[in-house]
Length: 115
Image 1 (cartoon, rainbow, N blue to C red):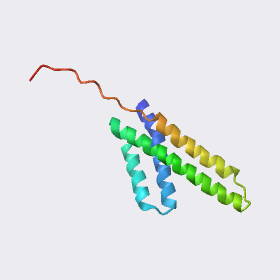
Image 2 (image 1 turned 135 degrees about the vertical axis):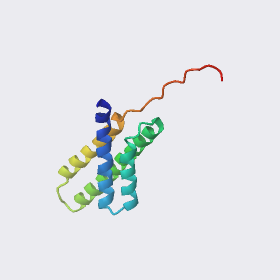
Image 3 (image 1 turned 120 degrees about the vertical axis):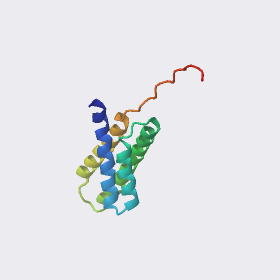
Image 4 (image 1 turned 90 degrees about the vertical axis):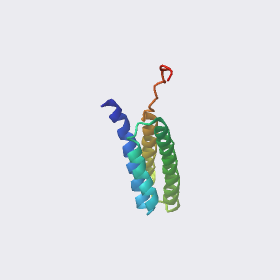
């Protein structure tokens, strides 16, 4: 049960990325984010490291979005603080979920009898 709880934040972060890309009309990135959500459930060490790296890249995408949207709001003299707080919370969630995702370690191979 505890391992599942470590995976749920990464699942939510991947779904949020899919929604973000869907709103932008980037269908292939939506598919990639949905695939990422599925890969979160695979307990293979290499796949978990790839998922972590993609989540960090997703956090960078959120930062790019923050920069763009806050800049637009500032140019228009519109309020931006709420937008900034919400999106920075999403950035923090995405980074936290990548950090929390457990990396499965392979057990060392024990030497067996010679064949």
